[in-house]
Image (cartoon, rainbow, N blue to C red; front, side):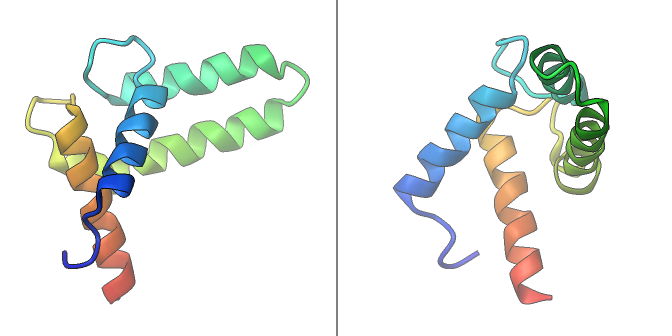
Length: 95
């Protein structure tokens, strides 16, 4: 994956991981992504259409780009998350 590894990009991915790690256990799973969408629903209660879209997008993010990187049976650490995102980006740019 030449050209995809930079210290700035790594910091951004670790920040994104922290935002998505809803239970703050240092591991990311599909349940964390659902919890993030649920929290957004609490903040924006009058927008169920947008929350539904957010849930769908986060579900696809997990299923299409992260679940296959899973070394822990449903949970990713920050490094595995970064690996999954980098692979997805590299695959998208070469298609």
